[in-house]
Image (cartoon, rainbow, N blue to C red; front, side, top):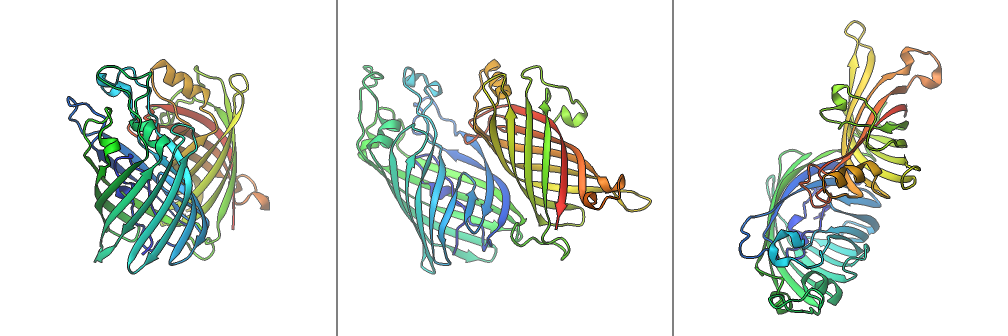
Length: 453
């Protein structure tokens, strides 16, 4: 049994809690989803009894060589029906914010980070054995972690039940970063404390229900325990660990073998666009016709996008897209790139008299990573005391018309011109992986796009 999705949860709950099976997903499968993560926080003092909620967007792709599994991604070096060896990059949600409770006043913030490393997975009728090694690549904890996990999957109709057990070891740097107290932070009621290597044991049950071949719902739960080195830390209030993760996902199609009519099965497109920083938000402003330029930052953006048909439909087609944008901000901190991977639903409008296509509309959802935070986002967030993040959610609106309606030139018959609205945001500050960012930035661009088959 292949498990094509995994994501890193807080350090006190195994990442296995959030592993979601994409059943028999062929290479090239792309999808989107979301889940709610609920976990007790060992850092909270006794006067905090709430259960924090975290919205986790899931960006899904399983390819021959590349994969994106929610908050983890990487490269398949080797991939067979019984074994895979991978380079892995994954998000670590663990953090300690001194503002969460007055007890932690004066402490340095322990940040979430990104780990990278290697994984080896062994598959068989006997289950799945997963070996991992990762290290910090953002110089936060500068530590390393090794993990061994085993799970067994049992199917009952559309249901899949998958119990697991996992053991992890964190070296001194990693464990001490999140659970140690330095001499500079120490005080009478919070003594200095140094952690050596730490071990974690966790177990739980993942369940999923395949409503259709494309729609999957899941509900997972896990429990964890720690060794004495963590239990004795003065930062730890409640050593018990439990995590619940519930949500769903939708598979839109396959970029290698699209589900389409014979004349469209190889369809792809390229697009170029250029535009300016917008004042209003994509929802509630630009979509209502407000195309005003930003008074926060006077910048421009240029981009090139490649798209591949995933599925054609009676009313809506789905495309997998990858875009590279150049943010032209020379008057501020210099120009830089951002990258977006997303899925677009594309519909068409037809003439009621001739049934000819007269326009297209598109709405897209995905992820965006910028080499640096755009200046408009920096200013907006600073004005309201909010966070910024290079990695954010991505939305796109597109409206255009076919150029064959104004020219009979052969090269232009499958080309379109119109407007694309580019948007980065953090889903209202509800998502840890998006930096708890509330807000974002928008750009209004003109585009030229051509289809190829």
